[in-house]
Image 1 (cartoon, rainbow, N blue to C red):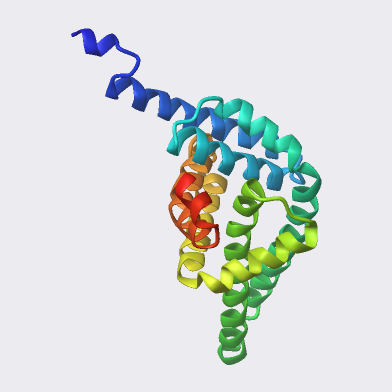
Image 2 (cartoon, rainbow, N blue to C red; image 1 turned 90 degrees about the vertical axis):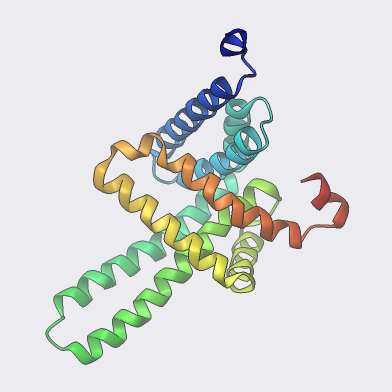
Length: 208
């Protein structure tokens, strides 16, 4: 019975993690409301989720806002660039849907569009985790994210699908926005952190 009220007990640790997932997701949502800050919010969310929840380090919320402020300058133009690319591809998808009467060219265009969407979503999936961990200029960040997309293609495909499903769930039903963003970051971290370790010096990889 005494273990039930012990703050280190299994039940309370998991309750604390669930609360952290919800609070971090809500922080991400409100910090993303200006739209242009969604990249900085995603960077901060990944950083806080990995260190605060996966590694059980203290100060997850403080870490979130510190990372958000620190990476704002680089994340905003990156979000604008890739957001514009995604919007253009979605618009093209709508036009393909309108032109569905001619199946041959439409199917070819749809295949190209799907490949481009995969590239954009997969690259974005690396973009903000990279920014949360390392210091980049704007150009170096985008170039490195593209390199990670190609170097870890199977993981990139899974990350793109995970991001697409998470975004669809949040936009379609709204209420998942209070927990899905942080869950998505945690699930993505299992693929991202494994890739990071392959590109880090042995001593830093062991520390991570």
